[in-house]
Length: 367
Image (cartoon, rainbow, N blue to C red; front, side, top):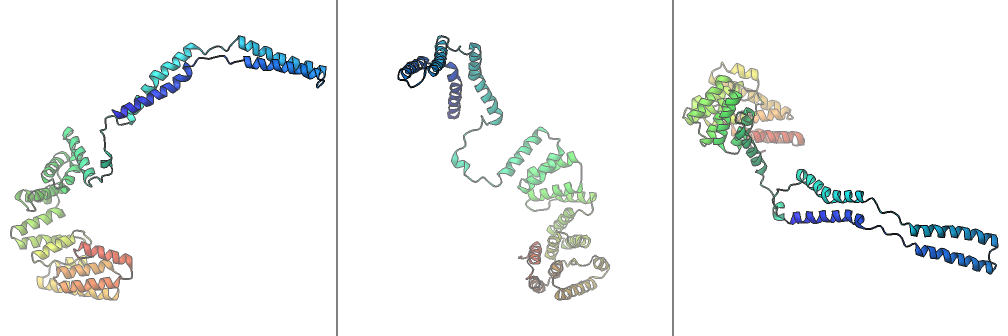
């Protein structure tokens, strides 16, 4: 109410400023004073002639000019200037009384916030919750989907966000709707299975396992589905099966796959010995070897890599592969030694040192 009262006072002041000049009457100027001045000037000319200060021709010329001005002043006093047109004054008054408020309201409603509640100063300076913008966005999308439940794109956008927020039950529903309205795919099935695991507290349930199997039926190389099926085997006590699944994933994966450290750590957890990420040709050749021959071959490649890095320590990726190889072979001491050698080799190159530390963090080591 205070705001509207202030607005009203401002409007009244603006109207008054417009109407005040229109309301004032047009009064004739006091021309009597001007006529008296001219009469005094005529008398002064007569005195100057008597005193011999000016000659008669000059005096006559001055009298003619002053008399002309005196007559003009007398005519102006008899015929005052006409008042302004009454119709124009009334039109201006109506515009001021009605037009100004109407224009002000018409501008304020689309540009202002007339329905915005009071926001105390203490709350304005308070730091907002970091998750509030995301929560607001999720709420808007949910409201949209309530009105448009067939919007497959909306469900596909909302589902992973709900999963990251820990709202697994809502995420499961969103993933199912995404499959319904967008079509089936290995990625959507694997995401649904992961949400089911989250809702179960990290346990790969039978329902989640079924979703991962459907994902692999659609795409035999789906990484997420393969990993969680290995995890399901591990949770069921079938360590050998889990190791077989994860080892097959590593054998097919490129050396720079970002999920390699996760699978390698899982493989070590069940007692497996994966092939380190060295040469793809060497990995392919090792598939047909016996276990003992394969391990001997792998250790030989690791030793050759270590020898090469001692001669040329600028290869950051090579150092990371060596550390990772020692980790998957279970040689913790050699892994620590390789890590120390790597840092010493790139200590004078800040960029390579940064890359090394980031790579070590991806391996789960302190960068």
